[in-house]
Length: 325
Image (cartoon, rainbow, N blue to C red; front, side, top):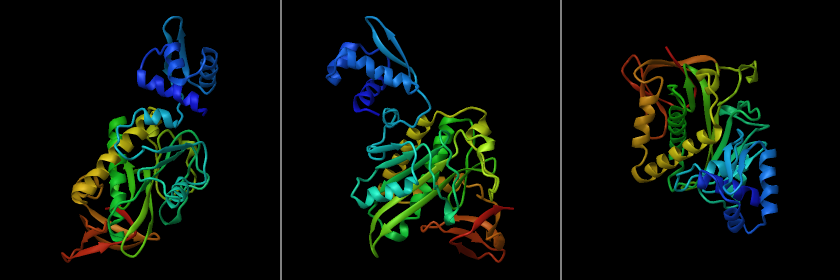
């Protein structure tokens, strides 16, 4: 989007009502003729803009685009999202964020795409990433923590997504270890962290977040390993994607600030309360075969699942799929 067009859009969000042509001209340093051309560009992109003589222009409605300016106008975060890149299509937002991190991008940089050609989930599984319906997002962090504590950050992402779902729908999200968010037992979001680290220090961590927002039933692949859904399918109503993204980033910003100040304990407590296995018996499977049974006993400081066996012993589970019995 042309910088002047983005600036007009930003003015609409800031003012919240009619903006006079004189004000736009003064703020942007452009002529009235140029303003009309930029307004026409916005209308062609799907924005509904009212024009009233002597009052100016007013943004009436926005298309469901993951526009960076629209998202920024809703952000209240102190760090996460202060630099935000919104792409029409990409190979993978995690790959983009990794490249930016290696080039020295600031902590809190966010990459969002409308579609991905090679989205991926845990254990290299594909993540279906159709255009125009979901959220594909990666967040760059540079925490001063030991590398073995990096898995804790996945739990921040899960809680932020759950809070955003509650803020935008009437649905009750649940979290499944290690990195899934569920609605009625069906997966609606997945999280994938990637890290660059030395022996005793983290260079950066990329929080990959995928949320099925407005996906229809026929857009899901036929070969899914586990049941999946979207907020649209479960609630019956479309989610405004820019609003969802802004709420999620705001919540993640607060969670990360608390994490740096107070450590893992607060988010660990909320995550366990939201976990679908809380207080229940579970089976841990690997490649479809059950490898452990017991009572879910929370997670430890490393993010490992704690399983209380029938003998009363606590067993640490580092990988596998969880099934509530």
